[in-house]
Image (cartoon, rainbow, N blue to C red; front, side, top):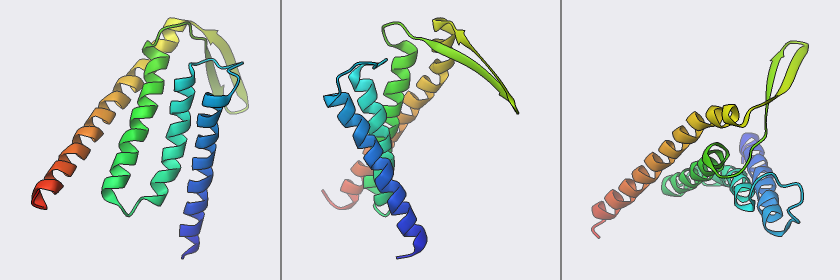
Length: 146
């Protein structure tokens, strides 16, 4: 095994472990200090877990397609909740230039509007990936004769 392959596996393992930590925290954590519902934290942890897992499944096209579609779906769900979900949000605006940074609080509406394009894009990408995965699965099944 090449050194690059070993490094990729280590990165994949660490990334997956961090993701599992946050999924576990969302399930068994006390919930104190959570600024989002538990499912949003679990979805964010799931994104990291699946990102690490995708490194292990690169040679398996259908498996990797499934993992990537699920990862984009979870990411889209979390961002969609930030933009369109119920409840109050707190946002901060920061402007940074070399050696200087300005930060101030931002309105809830401004923050939600900033997250909306990303949410819509991610949700659209997720739909496309699931459609493509289903189509590939269906065509593969038809070509194999059943």
